[in-house]
Length: 99
Image 1 (cartoon, rainbow, N blue to C red):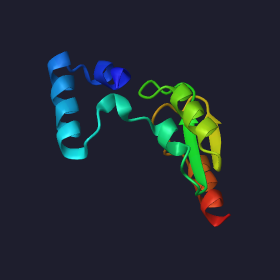
Image 2: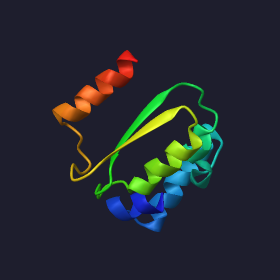
Image 3: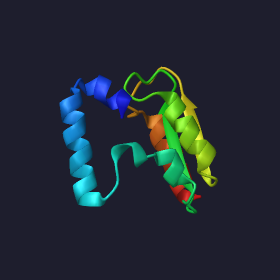
Image 4: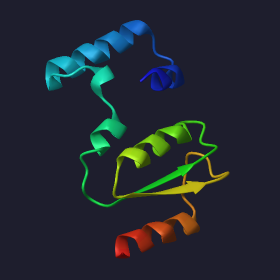
């Protein structure tokens, strides 16, 4: 959440309000949210595609997710950034879905 807070540039007061909203509506705190932690319980196959130069979301986040998601595949791209709208990527997704 610290990365997202820095990216969107909202202050501590907004973060506290968001945390309060999540707690009141879902009964857990923001610091309890961890995609890699939740991924440990996913049995389905999954495909993760992430560019190592992504300036929006760090590639290390996908590495942690892949490490904890036992039945996942990680495709690392280089130079595509955050938007992965390329024919090659589309074909890899189709291949995954067809397998």
